[in-house]
Amino acid sequence: MGTVTLENVSKRFGGFTAVHPTSLHIPEGSFLTLLGPSGCGKTTTLRMIAGLLDPSDGEIFIKGKSVNNLPIYKRNLGIVFQNYALFPHKTIFENIAFGLKYRGVSKQETARRVRDVLDLVQLPHVADRYPKALSGGQQQRIALARAIVIEPDVLLLDEPLSALDANLREDMRVELKRIQHQIGITTVFVTHDQSEALAMSDEIVVMSAGRIEQQGQPEAVYNTPATEFVARFLGASNVLPATTQVMAAEDIQVETNHFGRLVLPRKRAPQIEGEGRSQLIVRAEKVHVEPAGQTMDGAISVPGRIEAVDYQGQAVRYFVRVGDTQLQALNMIKEHPFEEGAEVSVNVRGWDCTLLPEAAA
Amino acid sequence: MGWFLVRGWAFLVYLFMFLPVAVVVLLSFNASQFGSFPMTGVSLRWFAELFSNEAILRAFRTSFILGLCTAMISTVLGVLASMALVRYKVPGRAVISMLLIAPILIPEVVLAVALLLFLNFLSLNKSFGMLLMGHVVFTLPFVVLVVQARLVAIKREYEEAALSLGANPVQTFFQITLPLMAPAIFAGMLFAFTISFDDITGTLFWKPGGVETVPTQIFAMLRNSISPEINALGTVMILLTVGLPLLGAAIARRMAGKINT
Image (tube, rainbow over all chains, first blue to last red; front, side):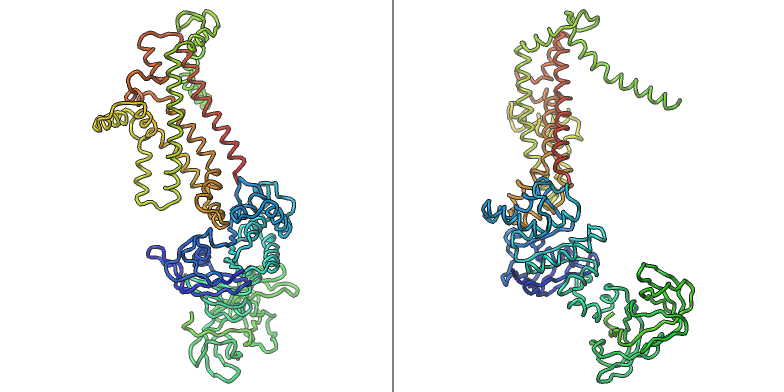
């Protein structure tokens, strides 16, 4: 098992910079997710760690040793590809044993390790089948088994769940995390799916346009987005113009057009250093829609009108008009959702909000 | 009514194309002295004569060896060229690709004369080797087209997965890429063999004196007389050039069926 370190690694394709100089350290045994929209450089970063792409600049270390000049087949990595890439002309046994063949593992030892890893992924009876005889979820498990049976230093996962359908994806997510935890392998996971990232990671690196936007534990990244991009990418957020007015020891007072004066704890505004223009981030689930006239404890209530309703079963997403702005509100349904056109009261609590300096936008 | 006419017309076109072939096959079983109607009885006499004709047997052997060598060389070159063009960044790959395909686009006579003039320019004599070279130039495009198409369809991830598991590039080629390409390679090889076996235009220009392939032998025999033996020979040729690709396609389909995802 090993650590992975990137020092000022960048990648250019002709005149296009896919990854700007990036430094990253992945501690031993941890599960790090590169999260971002397509084209943000997350897959390019992963492929550079894998050795499938050479960095234009900078240095990559695995287990403390520079691997810039080490070809992929000498890096001892386990890679799971988006479309599994199981060898179609080999049986499941041959697929899993493939990497062991090049490591001088004896026949009996190979048989034992293949059996063990098939048990680990809970598919003990498929060794003699061909990949196409397995379902997508099963192929996914075999791809994982093939990658971990060689006891790699690092496990690289390139959107491994995106080809599965929704229910299976959520099951596999738990399964993958269980296996990763069980063998304690350093893992780099690439995804564009924020819920996968939040559910599985020890650490999330949010990327955009070839740069790291924010790095931190899932809760920190979700609750205290460092930039407007992160706020918008992880969950639905409302971004409102605001003016920072009073900086107290514990609290910050903010004036907004829509909700008047709000009081935020300072830890919700780590980047705010003084008074002036700023941006108020309000998560959709922190915008509470109540019947007109009702208020909430500790919240600022303003009147609003429901413009659209996105019914989701246990929850509902409202598009509410407040003044000149449309806000998104994601609420649990108590009895019945409000209907389109309903006049409601919109409630926001200061301590649920995050404040960003305007320049961060 | 309209469709009836279209169908009828199509039927007539096919009849026009295939009736002569059917007649050749039919007459090859004719017992008569002359290779024409009326049929006087059914016999395998002409096949028997065919297989005791030294010149024809020699032509068969030549064609067979020539076809086999052409298929081998074209396939090896074609696979290597396809790998280079599809998997590696070769400078000027568009031009190279075009040049490799060009022999299909250029009229065969022009190609035949050009190669002959080129050999003259180098003051090389015609030989079996030169004939073979001509056939390779002529069949290579077919192999390249078939193998390239297959290679483009084989996802790079298979090779990348093999590399990540510790196989070096050579091991990856033999363990992964080659088996996945096998149906196309096989099809390309069959193409090359059949085209070489069938070819007459180029062969007439390139063959050294005294060497005959089956098509040139038929051509030579026709100049003297229309012997019923030619009908029998034609039947054998049809069997080979139609049957082989069909057989090959069936085998390739089975191979592909096993490995397709």
